[in-house]
Image (tube, rainbow, N blue to C red; front, side):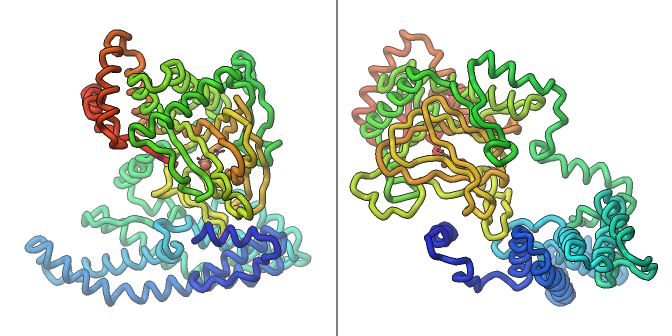
Length: 552
Ligand SMILES: O=C(O)CCC(=O)C(=O)O
Ligand SMILES: [Fe+2]
């Protein structure tokens, strides 16, 4: 649906006003309009929308809080029954238990209000970020007293926020006469004080009564968290270790240049030239002969696919193209079966490692990057179906989060592959029509850079919302590329890569016997899964079940 909408929006003559959203609650609609206007440098027009978003959010929090006594009380009674003897304490315990549940529920209202309909996670720090936008917008249009009130409100959440403090000093200096009565907004003052009072009680109960509390706010002062709990809360936060900021880089800044030079690779466009930050185009990663070998591998695999059940099928992204994907393990298995050339399968492994090493050197020299998925992908135009084609070969998306083009936000949550940190596309050919890769702004519409594929060209970029990208329709011929995703998370390292390497390292004689066996099984078994005896062998080595995988 979202993709269809994006497609219609791209049609010439269609204006944004032609669309009316009947689903989004008003405070989210106001928020989105405000962000759009700010993006267009229309601070004056954005201000009433920002205020509406803030007031709407506060109102929604109030209405949610009002519901905390009713339904929760009911649920609480149920819980007590379930917990049995333990919770059949005296009257005081019952009152305390009830009150804690009410407070937990009230605190949850902040996260509920900050969660867009249909989303699993809240927008982090919704109220402080609205206040930041408000003070900036007020300052831009010259409403200095309101700018002061709003920045002072930010400081209620984050008293040590350096940027806010600096802005405050600047606004105060710009005010023509001193306004000693100016303070933070009353509504925010009330909100913060009440919230802190509740947090204090909840943390106390957590420490002394063993109840649980998931603080929805990142701004809670450390002093409010009992010392005994700090360590545990910090550990919980750190569990998603790969999501943490990478440590500061200490390698000399010319380090990657030396490595590229050694590898005979040239940097054709850097982030700045591509109108982004973490983006690069590198050339010279493959010789024409290597491209030829990998293209042949893809062709042979798709021929073998017809026999073993892996047929090229319609693309999941467009009915006007066929799509074939080959994983490294499938390539190794086909090489063992003798249906593709072994040098081709070995090259696939080698090249993916080459890309990984270069991506690490260029983007993450101080932190190991692992391959998490490697896929040789060909897209072929379906002949006679290309006239009037409006769609893309690959719609605009980000690789590790769900892009919401309306708000420009990208949600790092499943079903996105949230552990992907850097993406790489290594192109193998250019003898097709269309099929350029393009980057857009987060609105998924405004193209910021475009790259023409060619043999040995690598486009590498960080996989997040800062790099929305898509592929223009392939309208003639076949476009093949090696798509690779890298991760900082060792637990998401590509197991099949290791299995493929093991398979390809097996001694030749053993292989020949198996080849015959394989031929026999392939000709008998039309199922799309690799033959069973082979599966068994790989399973024995790793202890992990194996399944032919496809990630797109
Ligand atoms: O093939 C390309 O150029 C891009 C493909 C892509 O973005 C993806 O598979 O996620
Ligand atoms: Fe992608």
